[in-house]
Length: 565
Image (tube, rainbow, N blue to C red; front, side, top):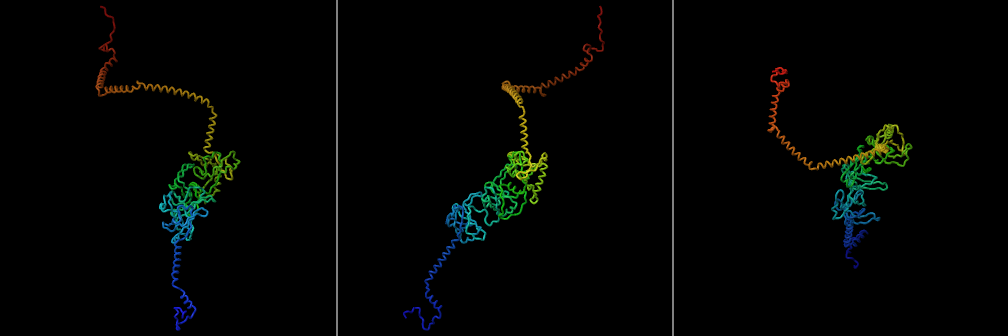
């Protein structure tokens, strides 16, 4: 038959299809051609290539930073431990032009690093107090460092820091917040020291305009975290702390690094116990210096007002209040509430000075401190003569301090009074004021003296002294002329010649010289002669007539007339 197909070879003996399903299968097999296999394979390969290309592109992330210096699209890499984990795809400005927006892709194998606490920062050449870093980027260019976090929550938008983090993520340590109301030069990376040894760093510095406070996030490494307790005080160090006040001269140098850039130091005041350990994110106050930090521990005090009749020049806020050399308080304000009305008992205007009596300085614990009892005790001491006096604490600067002591002579003059609702601490005149008063009295007495006669006598004495000086000058000139004459100048040579002749003469009469022996022999002969003359002298002394008569036994002759012839 002409309509029969080549495949139709059924014979009368072949079985015929028994159902519609068999007929459909047979029809489909008749329509499916092997040529369709190649397009299907191409479609599958294309879909696999698309999926492979999409999956190999990695995860798209969004990075924001203040300044995109050194960041280039398609060139700047993202690295972790110096291994490439991504690349910057685009760099653009934000809609409000306040920062740069960077689009980047992270490799699929690094997708798990993108957690909530992951951190990004730019690595580029830096010169700081710790040395030079990032020199390997001089030729290759800057790159972005990724530090994986430990959180389980994924994140796709991050902020890129311009400086490396102080402490790596996951490093054990203690993170604290320091709050201050002062401006200082502290920056990220500044040291946190304890007794001169660096134990941590400043991680972040933020200024809160609505609170007018500066907060500093610091990190202290684990071995030193136990040094921080609830009684710890933090204060700013700015290199060299030099002070010349009522307490004397003080010079404090924390460390060379603090000298160059400042920093923070901490410690527990000697008057407080060590305290208990604190947890992370604990807030502390940051004080301006060590004295302010120590002052912050004395939070329970009694306020008094000094009404000073003398000058307060040299008395500053923070000056000590001492009782016989022991500090018991601090000057809080100079002057204080200056425009408040003076008490009616005052006849003259006094300068109000606010002081604080701080019993905690005497080692009294908070639980054992009763301020009412201390107020009663001071009232009793006022009655027996306790007074406040301004005294000089440093002769170089003229700094003053408040000295508390008993004045018996004024013990009956105390009368309780208040100034601006604050109790008045009785005062007495200071030592310098007394000296000034004495000097004033002395000057007044000197002014009353009649000094004209004294000046006239002094003038006459000066004239007489001048005449005497003129005479002395004339004598001096005569003496100079005498000394300059040739005869006077030749005295020395003449004297030398005379001494030589005297020496020669003395040598001639020395024991060994012939003249000395002749003199000695002559003296011996004279001595013998004198011995020989001693009997004659004795006889003449006893009978002077023996010189005329040879026989001393005859009688004296009788004078008579001559006989006549």
